[in-house]
Length: 129
Image (cartoon, rainbow, N blue to C red; front, side, top):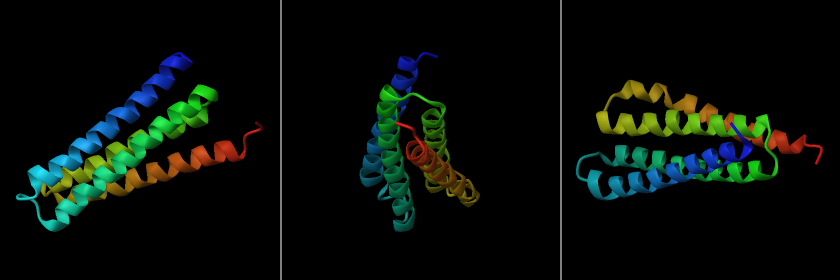
């Protein structure tokens, strides 16, 4: 995949996740408030908040890649996207289905987020530029 295509893909994934986070937040506020407990609504909101933050993170990584494409930036983007799926996805599924064992998956998403941010940070800390 070319550099331009990779950058565009990362930015697009970020933008689509930000869109989905807004939609999920609106769905929770208007469509789920009568169906979910206060605790599950808060959990759903947490999922949407983290999806938004990391969607923006993906956009930032994509913009960074326009200047400096390297494997560390790509790895950070992959881990961030995996974190969104595992963290936010498991929380959405848990709250909508009531299947509590899905909460076991959530920390793996959090670990992916941590790895993504550390990879990005150390990449620039150790950069020769």
